[in-house]
Structure formats: C-alpha cells, structure tokens
Image 1: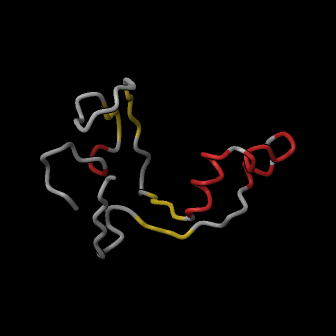
Image 2: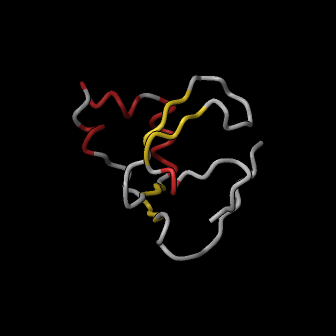
Length: 88
C-alpha cells in the first residue's frame, strides 16, 4: 500500500477541494453510464480534487514503477516536481 503524506499550508501551489458526487460530464454520458463504471464511480465517491493555477501536461509511457523516468512533464512543471526535488 502506498503512503500519502498530507500537509496543511497555503493554496499557493494547489488547492484541495471536496467535490460533488454529481458531475455534469457524467450526467451527459449515454444513460449516465459513467456512474456504472466501477473505477470512475469509486474515484468520484472519494470526493476530493486538487486544482492548480495552470494545467499540468505530461506524457507517460505506461511503465508502472516507482521512478519518474517514464513521465515527461510538458507544462506546469513547477506544480509537478521530479523525484528528489523539494516537496511543497
């Protein structure tokens, strides 16, 4: 199991918000099917989102390991530090 550290602080880097269970984009899917998709529905029920002042754009090659060598950040790098860099 992964460990997630959470720290309180300013909204300078990212803002954590509780999200509503009903989503417009999910409502507009055919027969509201997005609500029937287990991974999407489960993620939606967690109810939290992180937003940043600008978009973070990246490419991931699909390799799942604990290194960052498989992700190339194209924009918003200030909000997506590489491993070994200072945490916010």
